[in-house]
Image (cartoon, rainbow, N blue to C red; front, side, top):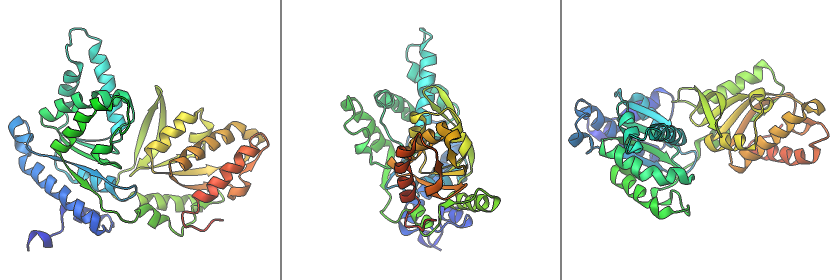
Length: 357
C-alpha cells in the first residue's frame, strides 16, 4: 500500500471521532501527519540545536469555520511528545509580558526576554497557537525579539490564523518594526491556506432551532448534544479570561465554543469590554437558562444587550435555552427602546438559515 492509499494519522483520528474531512481539510491533515512523523522521528535528539532547528512548523490560515483549530487540536492530541503545549495566542502573550516584567524587576537581569525564553523552553519544544491575531502594539513590538530567541533555541511553532502572515498587524502603529517577525514566520514555518469551503458550523446549524424554550431538562439535553457535535475532536476545559486584570471564569469551552449559564454572564458584574473579550475569543456561545427580563432584572437586561451587541458585531453564533420566545424575553420598561434592537438581532442570529420559534 503506497502513502497516498494510507489514511494519515490525523484522518484516522478524525474518523474515530466521527468527523468527515473534506478535500481541503484532508490536504492539510496530511501536512500535519508529515510534521508529526518528523517530530516523532527526531524527538530523541530534540535537545540538540543543530537538529531541532531544521524542523519547520506550520502556519495555517483561512476563513472562519473551515476546521483549522480542529485539525491542529487533533494533531496536538495525537502527537507523542512530552514538551508540547497548546495556547490561545493572546494567553501566550499575556504570560510572556508578565514573565518579562517580573524578570525585568531584577536589575541584574540584562535581557528579560532572553531569560523568559530560556525558562519557557525548559518545558516546551512544540508550541501550538490558536488564532494568531496581532492588534496590541505592546505585543507587536516584542514579537520579533521574542520569537527570534525561541526559534534560535529550536522551538517548533504550529499556528492557526484567519490572516496570512503578510496581513498581520496591518496598518498598525510602527508596523515597520513588526515586519521582521513576518519574515521569521515565513522562514520557520510552512505557510498553508485552507482551501475555501463551507463553514462546518453553518452546515451543522442549518435548519436547526437555536433558540429553545422553555428552560427545561429536555432543551438542556438538546443543547448539550449540539455542543458535543460541534466540538468533536476537542476536550472541554474550564478557562480563565483575564480582562484589565480581572478574571472571568468560563465554565466549559472547546473548539472555539464556550458554554455559560445566564447568571454567569449577566448576573455577574461584567462590563462592555468583558463581553467584547468573550466575543473576540469564541466563535459561538451556548447559554442556558435565560429568564424573562422584567423590571426586577434591569441590570441583567442591560448586560444582555451588551453581550448580544458584542456577539452580533463579531458574527458569533448563539444557541440557548430561554424561559420564553425571543419577542417576549423583555418585560421591563427602562431598556425597552434599546431592547427592540436586541430582539431584532436575536431573531437574525437565530436565523442562520434556520427556522425561528
